[in-house]
Image (cartoon, rainbow, N blue to C red; front, side, top):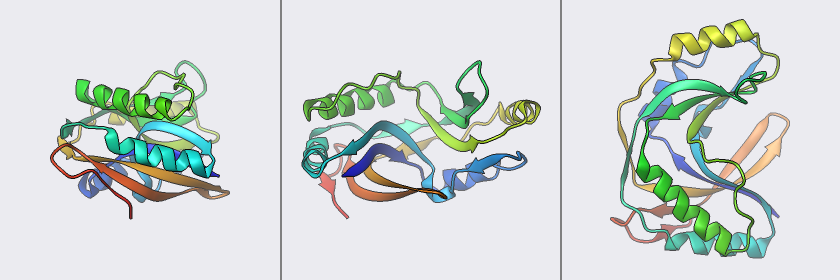
Length: 186
């Protein structure tokens, strides 16, 4: 069995920029810099046969290079006790088109459609016992955050193994935009 998700990786420069704002909140487990990503589709546990079908099927996704800009901060769930801090993405139709293509392939392999609305974001931290006032201060201090635009030329399939210290992610395959050839399995 494998626990899978599909993500867009971030350039190192953007990851380092994000890490500079990740401080000052007690009761928070910050995401490790090497695990910052934008989840395009969480798949969950699948057997080996489904894993291979998904990995092969994703090679049929065709897409152009995307230019993304990170913008603003927030938390999930809205209007309730904060559990996750995030950085958002500037409005971008291309990311929704790519998400639609990925979702179509995943459903063709036999998985159920994603029930949650796609809300593109980068998870910064998981909150165990946050002070609402300190979370509000963090959000106010970073509400104007905006990254430099960056190019995305591939998406990736990852497996994830949960441990008491957090998840361990393993790259299973990269899928490159139309300007590159097919996909790469490390």
